[in-house]
Image 1 (cartoon, rainbow, N blue to C red):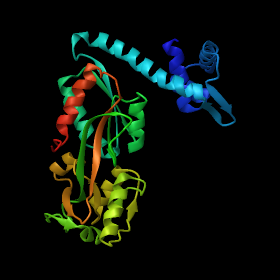
Image 2: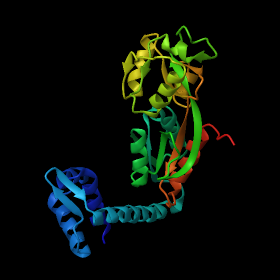
Image 3: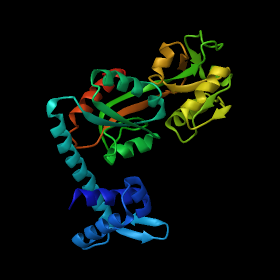
Image 4: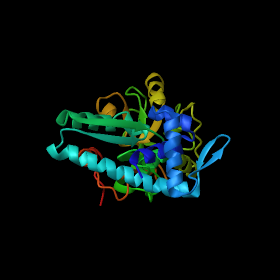
Amino acid sequence: MQTTALRYFLAVARDGTIAAASARLNVAPSAISRQIANLEAELACLLFERRPRGMVLSQAGELLARHAHQVLASAEQVVTEIRELEGLWRGLVRVACTEAFAIDLVPEAMAAFHTRHPGIRFDLSVLPPGQVTHRVVQGDADLGLTFSLEPSTETAVAYRASLDMVALCAPDHPLAGRGLIGLSDVAAYPVALLPRDTTLRTILDAACAAEAIAIEPALTTNTLSSILPFLRRTRGLTLVSSVALQGQVARGEFRALPIRSHRSLARGIEVQTMRDRRLPRAVQAFLGALLAALPPVQG
């Protein structure tokens, strides 16, 4: 099987139609159709179920998709290793992470790494936690940094830690000088939060229920970047992981306040890689830099 045919096949599997795959790959639809027909003829089976709303992988297609991801990853690995014979002069590092890490931590690590190795390029995708893991599993991201309630069973885990949430507020907030606050203190002010289908809300809502405290958000949004202006212009609070927005807190743009609660406000964060894949040299080097920017794992 040719890698081109496998790449076209995976694009259709991901996008659901030949037209969408054609637009993504900038390849004529007829060329994609021909390659898929060749694969089906070679394997003597249908790889897709053709439905009115698109194409869905058949059972045989699911098997081929798993194989194709490994084949393309291996082919990419060979090319990368050849290019890396001269050291960290060139390379691409693909990172997927949740927004909390994309505002500050990951870009800062990338900037510091690029200063030392200007030939290394980065591709950063900002996604919900589950989609981060999916990108890594599918081989579309070299590294994933995400929140998780349970350890990942789909990826290799290079780092896992359980970190407490903190309350984030403007420097002139009435609570800004407090060393420790409670959930009742949070509830006394306007609160901006992520939606209920996030790990943060799952843990926060359970902790509030344990103390019979009701927090009705003044702002609910699926992007942390939309919450920050709200905090700057109001007496509002939000909750974030203690590792998020460290740079902005260090520069005095926000205050991070530890929270005392009857139930743990900790949640897991993971750095994930694809199982059974030897990482390219540039990715290995950046992984080390990223781990150094995260809190040490407590033994």
